[in-house]
Image (spheres, rainbow, N blue to C red):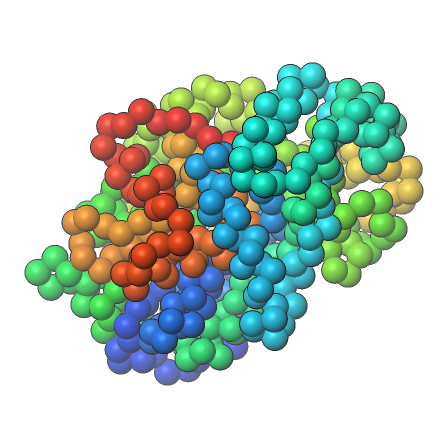
Length: 445
């Protein structure tokens, strides 16, 4: 599958050549949520086909920071976060391949008293769910992250949180699903659900129809456009982020956050580095469509968001065609959603990194990339069945939390599809909360 659209930071997966005539479940989308869902469905003995318009892990799943955390989660996500961390612990042993998961701890430092107070205010949630987290005083914070650019007022150490490898996670999960009988079909875009009398009977793809009793849409930033074609409203909007990867360098910490940068050390000794909150909200037809639903979140995060207009208005998952079009071949027009990085932000990230850590004064960039992070109006994922279409399910809108929560979301989605008693209460993740007029409470990003 190596080709011009293959992102250089993701391990390739070989496709199964033959499309099955029929399976129990078709999963749409080969990111970490889709591959985790396929894995846990196959582990239940169900026959599964996973279809991906590009290649496994080609969009946000391979472009994330790689954080796996409980710290600072919205309380509604905590049971799902605890489930995810337990599953991360188990996956390498089950599949027999390393996903890069390490409970290395997360370190946060800040010069903002308000931010520090917010971390302190979260401690009752930590105590409720048994999360080991310790506040750091100014001297302890300075001992963790040099005060070369700012003087810290404090920080915190989340002891048992950690990281996994974005280049490996989705591919390894896909291979794990295949070992259990699932088939993987890359370069195979979904076109629409086949239904009879309001019930799923299959999925139409660009390569033909797969008969199935259930379809799970785990299509990331493309999910709203896919569901719209089935008559289902899913409020979703994406923000554009920029990150870079250094060349391998000295170890100055495994997972570090401060106002000037967020950094994760990767298995090869390089770092993924970004600046938290520095995102662009691009004006799109889908964004305008759901502006009322997203207004509370926009107002709350106004200072951290830049506005912009780009080709996303006419191309991609939030474009005019996504909102108003009906072309069945729409999803195969953009195999990989691959926005360019913000050049000025790349320079700022590198300058901040070199200026904060004297040991990294000569560090070099290996690569930089852009990514679209799909969000819901309350910044909490949707993992839900559809009331109007029996056999259709949705797992998307991860709001920047999808990598760490991926195994748990996939596990819960598999339980819902298999009609099993869910391991966590799915009430907070139902789609209806976003479309039934309920008050939207914006969670943590």
